[in-house]
Length: 172
Image (tube, rainbow, N blue to C red; front, side, top):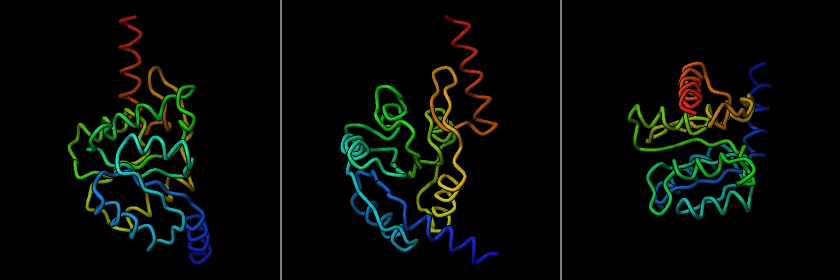
């Protein structure tokens, strides 16, 4: 049973197209090497948020791995733009925020913006693989809840989104 599962995971990983968006060339290389070691064959890179938006439009990747802190357009701003159906052509692309910043407010904000998964650098290949498989093999439905558009929130994020939606309705 385990080898059947690992064959399916291997096939899934080999077929995925990934975009890495990070301003640090060394980190892009580290993440690329992790992905190659996991079996990913199609990898694109962008050195900043603006180039990342263009690469998402151009390649329509299966997954984006995104840094938070970047010049010109940071990761949070990029997610806000991408998660705009009707405005951005690929609003449903799965996003993993991979950052050196692990403050709780960033984790909460990433969830509020519609990031699928949040990982803190340094990251292991196993942790990255687990999150990739979680996103690709068992994707959460994309939903609109008030101003939120993104993957169906997990329970603790759903409560935050509901509270914000209720506050928005109360002030309208």
